[in-house]
Image (cartoon, rainbow, N blue to C red; front, side, top):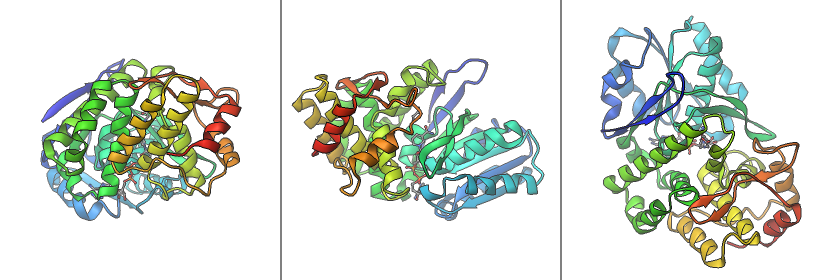
Length: 361
Ligand code: NAD
Ligand code: GLY
C-alpha cells in the first residue's frame, strides 16, 4: 500500500491510501471514524458489488445505515441530495457521525456536500470506485451538485478525513469508464507534468489492458500531482484553477447535451482539445503540439470532436455560467506549452467563436 498526504493548514491534512484489497482493511477506516454512527452513501450499481464487503469490514460495533441512490449524473441534484439528509435525520444521526461515500465522482461529490451541510459539517471518508474518482474527484474537497443551468454550481469546499483508493474495485469498471478516468490522468501531464505525459503516451496500451502496475503508477502519480496543487491552493485562488483545463468547454458539453449523455471524462477530453486549439490561436502551441494532444486522447479511446448538435451560441451561453468567470466574463485555462497550463485567461469572444466554429479534431 502507498500512503500519500494532502498537506493542508490547521490540522486538516489527510492521507490517501492507494493499493489492492484496501476495502477489507478495516483499520484504515476505523482509525478515521469518530463515533458509532456511520452512513454509507452509494448507488444502485455499486451497492451489489461492494456494499456488503464494506459493511463486513466495519464489523458489528457500529450503527451502519445506508442510502442507495439511483445511478447517474442526472441524479446529482438537490432533489437527490435530500435523500441523504432524510436518512441522516430519520436515523437521528449526531454531529459526530461519519458519512462514507462509496462510489464514483457523482457519489463522492454528493456525499461530501451532504457531509458539509448536515448539522453544518460531519466527518466523511471517500472510497472512490472509478478511476476518475481515484485520480481526481475524491482528492481535494470539492463537493456539490449540478443545476439544470450549470454543472457543479452548488457546492462547498469540504475535505474528507481520508481517501481509500482500492485498485481492485476497478476490475468491475467498464472500458468506457476507464477511458473517462484517463482523461483526468492525461490532464496532469498536460498542465504540469510533461514527463508523466511522455510516460502515458508510452504506456497507454498497458493502461487500457488494465495492467495492474501501470494503473497503480498512474493513480499514484495523479494523486501526487493533485495533492501538490491542492496543498498549494486549497480554495482555488490561483493555481488550483489549472486543474480545470478543458472543463469550461467540457461542462458546457455536459450541460448542453443533457447530463449523463457524455461522461465527464469524455467531455473534458473534447474540452481540452478545444483549449489546445484556442491556445494555438494565441500562438502558445503549434500544430504539432495540438496534434499530439488530440493523439493522446484518441489513444485512450476518448473523443476529441464536439457534439454536432450544439451551436456556438449555446456554448457561449453555457460557458458564461462557470465558477472561474469574473464580472460575467468568460475565463478558461489554456496551455502556454505542452506540460504548462496558464492561469485563467479572459477569452476574446471572436477567438473563442473561431475555435468553436473551426475546430475539427
Ligand atoms: P460516476 O460517479 O457516474 O461513475 C461512473 C459509472 O461507473 C457509474 O455508472 C457508476 O455507478 C459506475 N461505477 C462506479 N464504480 C464502479 C465499479 N467499481 N465497478 C463498476 N461500476 C462502477 O462518474 P465518475 O466518472 O466517477 O465521476 C464523474 C463526476 O465527478 C462528475 O459529476 C464530475 O463533475 C465529478 N468530478 C468532481 C471532481 C472534484 O474535484 N470533486 C473532479 C472531477 C470530476
Ligand atoms: N477537479 C478540479 C479540482 O479539484 O480543483
